[in-house]
Length: 371
Ligand SMILES: [Zn+2]
Image (cartoon, rainbow, N blue to C red; front, side, top):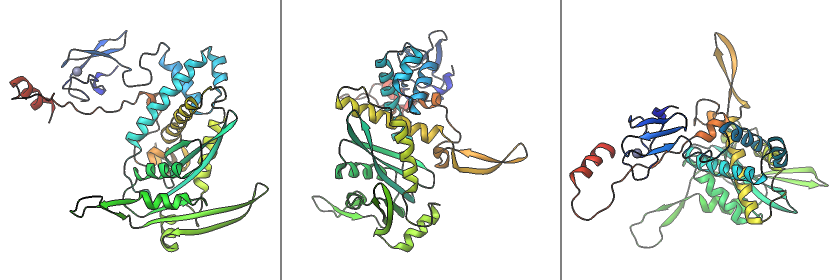
């Protein structure tokens, strides 16, 4: 237990969310509890993680979550660890929600994406199919997120492009997508910024400059690709080629990188949802699984093509990197335990709103904690 890395989770505490203020001490080694000296409240070390209030050991939960993230069938886990099926589903849901929050906090930050590939896959679950649309930043192989929907429609693509925009800086950006026309209108609609004109009403929406869309259309004959058409739907070919070279994303327009990622997700999701009862629960499970797989992929998995030459102990060696390392989000490969133990920062305390003048005590608290 290390109190220096902890913060007080009490929403009413002035020291809430602050790290390194020496206000946290160990309350009980046996019960794994800390105490905040400012509000005098104790809290469990697992507060804010998927382990909170679970009866099973963190090691067992982590093992089960790791197996789920690599596509191990839930029935196999139930049989191997003698757990109830509902317990495993509940852990999966908790871990998935945690991963989604983490993804939104760490990955969905504006960055120079250069080249993004997006695609949809269908996943077969209990007699029908569910669509999963995902996007990938090519140079770092960073998974940018995904959307689950019962249909493949414009809404699905729009939500996905909206997700990509949350991670994009206004820099030249090339989209490589398949032949689905919904991408073009979605990119054109989403990548716009309101231009204030000083008048009332809805401001003008100005399209971002240098947003390029390349399409890779494959023609199939009896499940085999017989022809590939590559064309620009927006922007000039030379600009696209420059971005392809900059992002090390191949010689010509392609969707190879997202297809590789799709295959990974598909194999890990394959064992999913066979025994779920309701559709709503299924979507929830699928969403949770997707974020779990995505975060394990981004943070915990070395990617061979991302390795860089380096020197360890005087010898030249290849240094493996994860997509999150390549994107500069972290400096090391995380374990699944580390992923699950990550605590999202809390917003700082703000003094309660009251009429009249603030008391001396409140002023002192604001001076101490709100700077
Ligand atoms: Zn406190």
